[in-house]
Length: 258
Image (cartoon, rainbow, N blue to C red; front, side, top):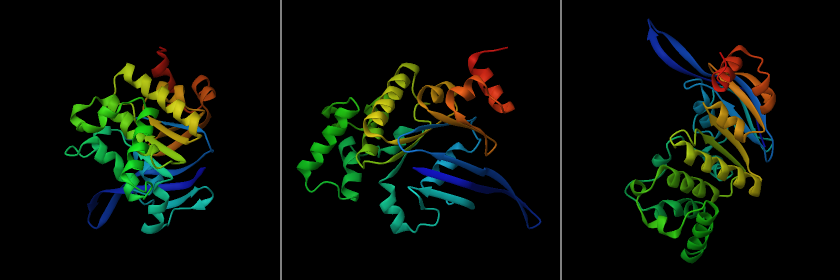
């Protein structure tokens, strides 16, 4: 579905006597996500996970490397071409509240993608699609006529997922989608991701600093450390037999070993 080759992205830190120093947020990253697969990406905060996520959907332009989506190089696509691609590749950010305009009722935010991409011929069809999406994520019509501040974090995250699904994406990049939720709600959202991924065959890149969360949802995973992918492969194998020193420390922290 998506293949990444030697991606690099650096940001300037400071300038001393006309010589700039740079921070390598993403450093020569290569991996592949197969069609219908859930691929986990785990690493500590600041290791480059979110930067990588934004590069994949071209919100940030890479310095070097290639991104192939369905065998097409999308690294240098122009604005018009990116617009067409965005409906097929969707990203879910860590803070779900920021995905909705606080001054707009949920319904108005939900229909925006349908109108922008001209996916509903009239208002009646818009309403039908929105209600179908609500049913998929386990919410009711009454949620549509509230403001974001009137909803819980779990409800907002379900609505974010419903809005993403309105575009029928083939790849969803979920960047820490459960980190702001309590444990019980987190489990519900993870189960919802699993069900939707299974029902629609969507490829999913699930990003988290929490190894247990990634382990519970992914088929394969990659461990990111200081901008690099230091280990990747079958989720169970990495969890049980980590090879890289950072992977070993990460597993040790989550299984509670001395």
